[in-house]
Image (cartoon, helix red, strand yellow):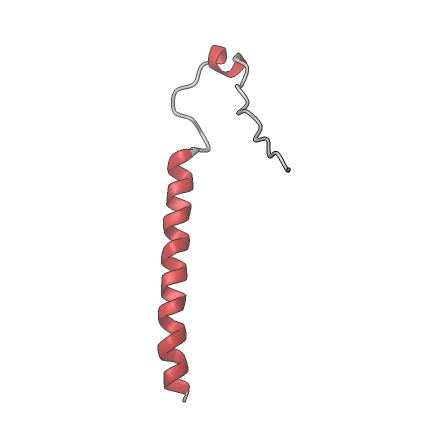
Length: 58
């Protein structure tokens, strides 16, 4: 009984850890903490906000 439980839970644990690592790596690639090449002029530019999503309820 114990081996069956371990045989089910261990692969699930490994998959969760792998998916978490992939997700962290993807987040690091999309938004680096320290941008490599930024100047003062780039930092002063206003940020463009994405359009808000509007949901119409009938």
